[in-house]
Image 1 (cartoon, rainbow over the protein chains, first blue to last red):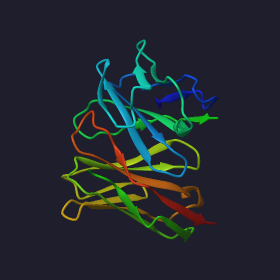
Image 2: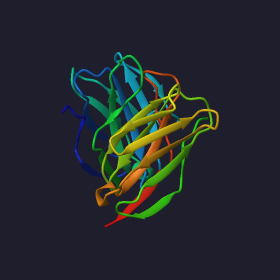
Image 3: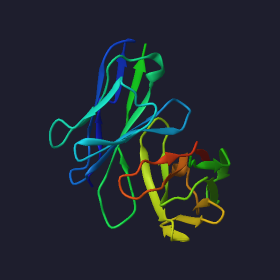
Image 4: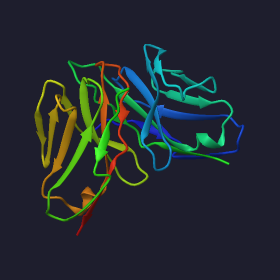
Length: 115
Length: 112
């Protein structure tokens, strides 16, 4: 069964460094998302992406964040200058347009630790 | 803004018992979904119910939706130790290409 994959599974970085989190959505999906979950808290929406542009972004998704779909398969989240509070699990999700519903399929997540 | 809130926050039951988890939200929705998350792992989609549906079944899962009360319940029948996980409801409000708003989650422990 197709699934969303994410790499790396765990990323440790120093504060102020740039990180790129990678995702490979399900191949026939058209809508892509990033969410994050700070330890012990709820999952929060960051950004949605469709047709090679951002559809919607949350207040969390400030100028330090960017997303890109550099080729036909990868979907990346870049954090330019990481802060301690960026430490969280980052989930990629994808969704295909169908007759209704909005079932988003999530990847296993990347645990980002900022030291 | 819409927000899913589940209750109880933690539930501990014996294997074989049924587990009922509730979710409430604040604004009109298009769909409501339930996800499961094993400790430190990803989110697994369980079931989606649309705003014009009242009940849906999938295996041992039964989901109800009451849009007048802005609430949903997830029932897991004949629970197993492997059902131990956190369960989240998530809502969306504008159809395709819509962000999900998650609740805080319910931690279910099923004792063998």
